Image (cartoon, rainbow, N blue to C red; front, top):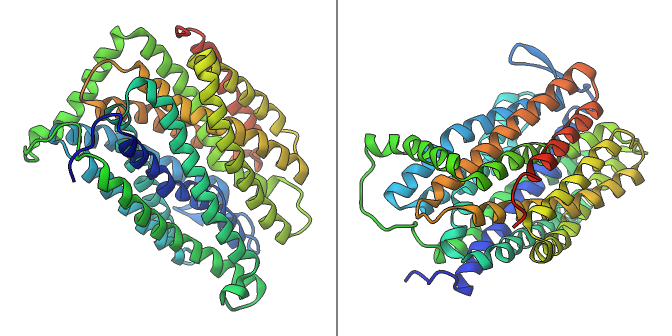
Length: 437
């Protein structure tokens, strides 16, 4: 396939379409079906399990495993992105992590408490596959789009991701609520659990299948070389990361922006990853069936509203600027976390889900494109985006560990959510130091 020119509509659409392919992971595995499935496994035996020689609460356990996966990604992403830029084959790395993540989603079909370690391994590898592929996916943005195109195409990517993942989630929801229509046998509870397991397999198939469109049009890398992998190339990843750090010392707007992004992303990603676990444990649902239906409906609301949020945020950034728009969104998030401490009823959770969806889509799309705009002229974009991703991952590690520790000690995650609100307040002050243009 001949490489399409930078800014080409077909190339931009192909890049954005990867969000359609991989966002089913974040929705079904990270946010909706797997957390409900995971909670259901513990429904009869209580929320605590002995694992790794410790007695851990189930939601704290999954928080710690998630944090460990992000430690892994944070360490290896700068190394791999440096290799990708040097050898010029970032698409191969993106494919590798995509397939690892997709196959691990399929492996969750066998997740159970009797073989908890194998199940946690698949969950761990799924996280690594998804976030590892994003390092290279995000780094394509300045390669394929001009600065004036980046806000819009970034928002389009997130919008496609929300729409595609919602389509699959609706199918999965129908399978879970009416399993017999789909030929899934067993008692109501058993059939619903089987349907959830089938949904994990469907995520893997969807991810692999639809990513092929992006792979067909995306270039091999930012530069086409035939250099072979060697020891020097491996250590080149760390050299590239150090080079980015040196550049940041002289690029004050980018350095200040990364500080605000770090604490903001820490809170946003943690809230997104634990929202369903919070809803399952802290909201007073009338029955188990209402809990399952209500939680999935909330996730659907978040996804649908997020599409609107991403588009409106893109327009707001054009009118008011990226930084002022991000400050407003972080303010909404801070208020959201404060109010979350008091919610107990399903209606409260539905309202909060609507607010979260609106600001979630906006902050993700705008954060990515703002960083891209602030980058200096360079071909080694993967190294710069690995720095961005490392900041994001370390933030998630801190956020998930704090959430897990507070949840484990107090037995309730409410204080943890309020604590995350302080990070949004910190982000507001840090972003105010960035030049508004």
